Structure formats: structure tokens, C-alpha cells
Length: 262
Picture 1 (spheres, rainbow, N blue to C red):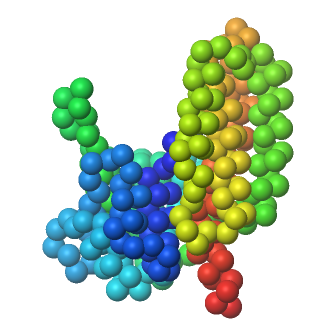
Picture 2 (cartoon, helix red, strand yellow):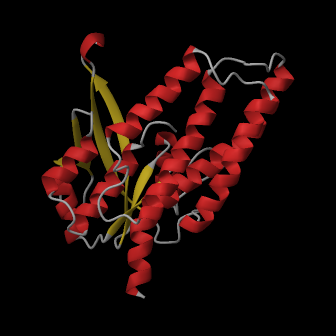
């Protein structure tokens, strides 16, 4: 939850490119991030894998007007609309991008190569057909913001009640990492996104930080198995809310354009 999903970068900067807010070079640079290389395989009209610049141009030619994010988890097909094969691949990857304007979707396959001291990451986006239907369980920005405010209170109360450590080296490192990411670039979404989407995504990341601290910072005061199970059970709906809000933020670009077209 702390790290930005690759599907989020692809959707956000792909949307900015499709709308003419950024150049192809800037979009590809932002999408690739710290990875070594991204390619797209299975695009209609292409015999083999192609680079992101060509792929995004091809998607535009195929009628794609926007990109949405899906962040599914077991029992929660968040952002998906089928068919089963695409949903299964997306669930395995825990993320996907669904095209708006053409019945296509993209699922990342991540590969690591090189020695332990110099590992580089390559990503192949598998292009597959999708069902044209409303995405599952994606809230509006306003709904997501209201849910997140409550989830933040719940997460804080749960950590306090179960005596999960809020200090110490692990928690402090998590907070420092979050702050470093926030300061490194305040533009958490690409140009063209509404300010409310930026606000919702930042709040979702903050809730995600608390959840990560809870799961990664040992057992805290939850010394028994039943107490640890209670903590996980209490945090599960909070984590679900944060994921829903994350998807709502990334998808706000397409939702706003759809409303403007009506």
C-alpha cells in the first residue's frame, strides 16, 4: 500500500498523455520510474512486444480515451469487470489497467534480472480483452474521501486499543520513508487530475502507512494468537477502504471527462 502501484503510474500518466497535458517522453519516464524497461505485449495489430511510446499511441488509435486502475484482492474484484481470465490475471498481479473507449486491459508481469548487487526490473504489460461494464465497487471521490476520514480514525483507534507500537525503529523508518516520498515530489498524480483526487490519494497513502506499520512492526501488545487475529480482522476493512479510495483517485480523470461529455 505504501508504494505507488505500477498500474497507477501507467493510468495517471497515460491519461495525461492522451489528454495532451504531457509529452510522450515525459509520460514514459514517469511510468517506468525506477524500473529498467516496460513493454506491452498482445496489442491488436502488433506481432510482438512494443515499447510504451508506441503502445500508448496504438491504444489511442484503437479508440482508448482514458485509463482506469483496478486493485483487486481475494474476495474483492475492485475495479474489474471481467471476463474471468482477465480478472484471474489481475488478481494474481494484484493490479491492472482497464481501457476506457476500447475493450482492452493491461496486466503487469514483473521480472527481475541481474546479480543481487545490481538487480534490474523489467515489466511486460499483457494486453487482453475485457468486458465493457462498470468497474466493481469503485466509489466516487466524495464518497472515498468521507470513508477515508472515518477509516483513519478507526485505524488509529485499533492500533491504540491493541497496543501496536507506534514508535521504535521500524515504525520510525516507515514514517520517514513516507515523508521522503511526499517531499520528493508533491505531484502524486499526473497533470490534469482534479485537486480532490490528489487529496484523496494522499489520504489513502496515509491510511496505508498506518496499516503497514501495524502489520510490519511485530506483534506490538497483541501477545496472543486471538489478539493478533483480532487486530488483523479490525484492520481488514480499513485496508479495503484505502484501496477503494486509491482506485477512485486514479480513476477520477476518466470519471470527470465522462461527466463533462454528458
